[in-house]
Length: 83
Image (cartoon, rainbow, N blue to C red; front, side, top):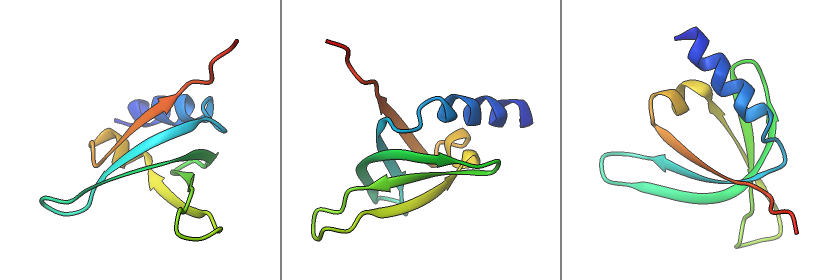
């Protein structure tokens, strides 16, 4: 399992600055989808900055790589297009 976590961390490290869609499961029947940017990676977690539509401040949330591995959250990374 440690090897899989390291692979997840390395792949997310390459995506710093890219936009992502984060789908989180918050209870039995509640699913929340938000869009943001991968801001920073650390040995045990990574930080996503979400755009807050209700005011001008951005919201930062950290997630564990375990959350990705166990599918508690799902990430969809938007690759920048080159014109």
